[in-house]
Image (tube, rainbow, N blue to C red):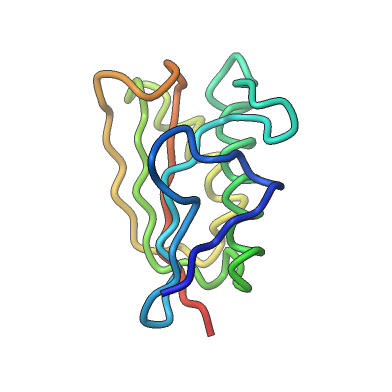
Length: 124
């Protein structure tokens, strides 16, 4: 098992890693809209927050030697299911291979953000 870590994505805000590679797959921790340079939450609406989340995921994928096209499963958490449409508009720009996905609304996300996304990707 290998730990994935990059300073181009936010550092973990708890006792976990950005990701682990095991059995040829990357299991990436959920990403929220934290600017890795400042450690601050950025974006006032779902579209801007989702874009930053996707960019952070991209950096973790890159650090693991893979990319969006190799993502096989995502789990998406929204603070409000009313944001489903605008979230999908951003999501589909990054995950063009249409991986399997779960998307749920939750009562609250860390740091009161609007979305969080985790991925599983093939690493070859």
